[in-house]
Length: 311
Image (cartoon, rainbow, N blue to C red; front, side):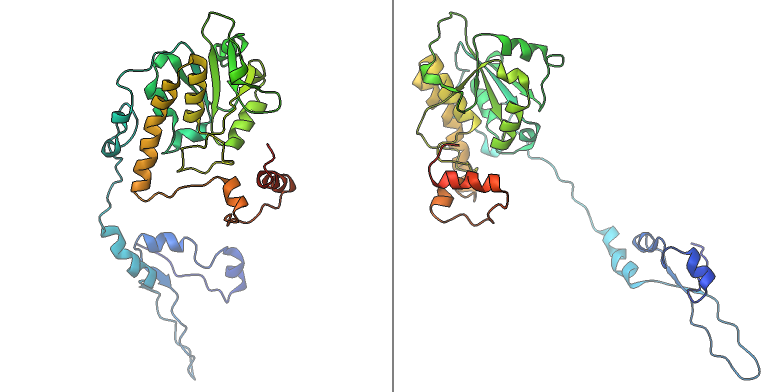
């Protein structure tokens, strides 16, 4: 590699033209190139001056340390083979805990899934879909839904037999809903964290059209490998299991759908996972070790959790 001596930094003209004393220095060092240094000027002698010696390439210490890194073998990261039905690694396949045949139901589920849930390893929607017929569990991924881009979903939302599961002051308990029509019902469930679900629900006008319902239950979530806001908050799979059991008037549906979730949590706990208590439980028992939020609205919500106030 050819090169020229480094600029003389004692010269104001050269110092003004250069933006950095070592332009591209790290790129050259990582490539294993020699580092060019300007030799120190020779001392002056009486009766004349001696010219400075020619510039010589000197291998930098950084380059010497990095030289051997390029020869190290690099292993490719390969994903473990997954089961085509439950989407789990084959060594911890959950198919033995799934029903042999999809459950026969009349209702249809529409899962509105936040895009971030697709990349989560311990998601529950694939297990739910594996328990139901493909035409009875449809997954729509996105954050914003308009009638132009999602005409099928818009038609579903305008159907008078469609319900959307989202708790709130305006929601009716699902147990109190009396189905007067002979046509099958449709249930929309939002899949994501509670903040993501709230964002999807309130920022899409389509989801104001169906009747809003909620589940009135005192059961605690069995999805203990993820933290829930309160003791009665349920995962997407658990919500679907309870809702279908009510709509179909068959408690066996709930037990069948919860079985793979119980197996999933058992596998994770056996391999080092810890039980996650709800934020409500941690706050009430003085076990919440994270810094308290400075935002007054978030702080108020945490106070309501401690005081058993429904939020």
